[in-house]
Image (tube, rainbow, N blue to C red; front, top):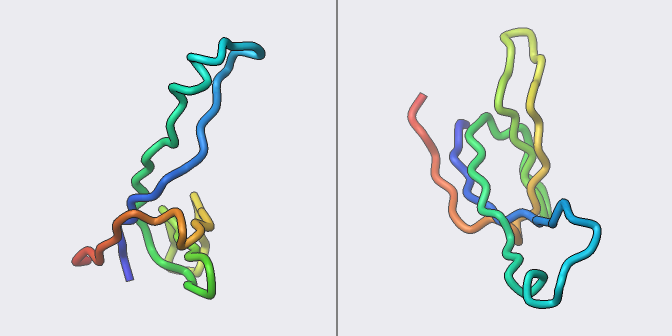
Amino acid sequence: MIELIEWEDTTHSDEPWMCTEDAEDLMPAIMITVGKVVVERDGSVVIAGSWGDGGELGDVNCIPLTAIKNRRTLEY
């Protein structure tokens, strides 16, 4: 099954030190991943952005279900 998953990821600053106001402005990043669902289990979904006809997988992510904001199945 091919899905588009919109999910929330952690973010950070590249600066080693920052003022409180800048820290308060940090927000989670909204990510979009499109790929083949490898497995869905309690608490997470594993999705591969690339796959071969021999079972090879590439660009594999394990996304916590609690981080998912939206998901939909795509026609393939």
